[in-house]
Length: 305
Length: 281
Image 1 (cartoon, rainbow over the protein chains, first blue to last red):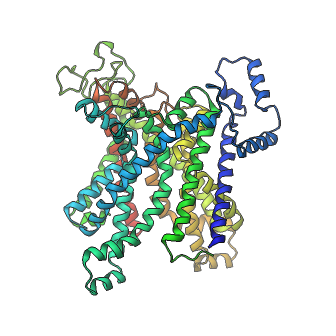
Image 2: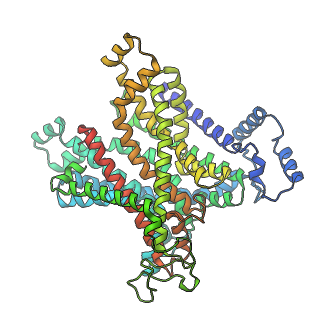
Image 3: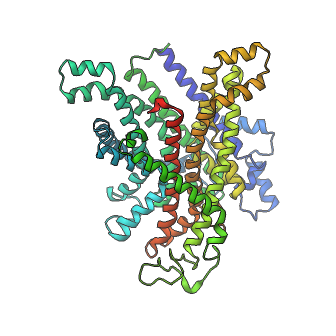
């Protein structure tokens, strides 16, 4: 098992290196990264100056080596706009994004787990059909439009909640719900189908035949096994959650990394975009590494050789 | 899932709903210039921010109201269907072709597999929208770039599914037989194996069209997708948010259009999956 953990960790480092490599080459897609870092009216002297300053007059392999070397030392360049290290700019904004993503995850789980369980038990009833219809519709709405609709209802029409910004729970609830809706729909659907499968299996029949209370059969025997795919999906969907946070933060003027990325793109501040993307992808890789490692604890059936 | 709904015959109803909606939007996209009451970009500054026809203060002739420049919302939504469907379908064709080729080769050749699946893992570490944002930030927006970016970012799902299908098919009798009589690798992969795994490809492609339409509208909403002079649903919603306090209709109707199309595609996808894979019931 130890070698399994070690292998997973090494592989995660490999993926992180790959992420950094992709980010490095995206900046060079047009051939001249300096062009996207300066305003369109920059003079040739300014461009040459920046090029020399960033070491971009050197061969690509050397540039790549320098980039990785700096990255390993957490030196990810300076923002052209703010003149500060990009890493510290992003880490300042990161707590807000993580708060939003965390809150959406919690809301998604709080709604989806009971909804999925009840739908599976009451399979085929009007409740089940209602839940499944809501799930389908929820999965078909873009995150940003859900946000706009919420603002339209709760801020503009009923004047109950602020349209945006950061503050107490009243600022958090709408963006967190909008961002979490897709995951909520996905988990409900997944939990329902995996619970239905579990409920028709032999060990559940045995548990029932033993005369266990239905609550215990479902809660202790069926649910535990059905939650496994949910854990996997939650891990994988964290990526979608971080990606969706960009749009959500813009809709709700939430001062997180996503909003900063969009501002940075509009300011042609590519160093900042690059750092943000590496960091968010890095968070995703690390969360999935943790999920992988958790599996060792949750699912003793799998042999880790 | 639909099989459960079908018990009350709602399933069939859903399926028909999805087909009718999709056919309707496809027709709208084709004949938009003939049925639109106005030029989608024609500005009528005396009729700015007018509400839909059934609300007090509306101006006759503008069924769904007008936007901040006095442009007819209905005409813009009708034209917007062209953008969404065009980008959705083209991007999915690109990602489907890339994904199918990589998936077939990865399933068949172990060296290709070792490399491509590592690359797939790296790409999956990027949330799609972030990767698309980064590339658009460098290359600039515009329809062509958008289609290419959304096409390139979508290949992994196809590649993974096709790879595992090929792996399981590699030792099947018909593949072994074909190889024994000297069929070349290329012919074996594309003429013998590919036709047998079309079902999962079609299923993934269907769902991908839906997610691509959402991705396109999100990028356009952020101002980094379709150029603002082209009427697209994402662009309209982006403007709508600026006037959310005074003109709710700009924020509502384009979103309903997106939702209807994506919902119909998702229902169709479920249906196709159930048709091809009886086990999933």
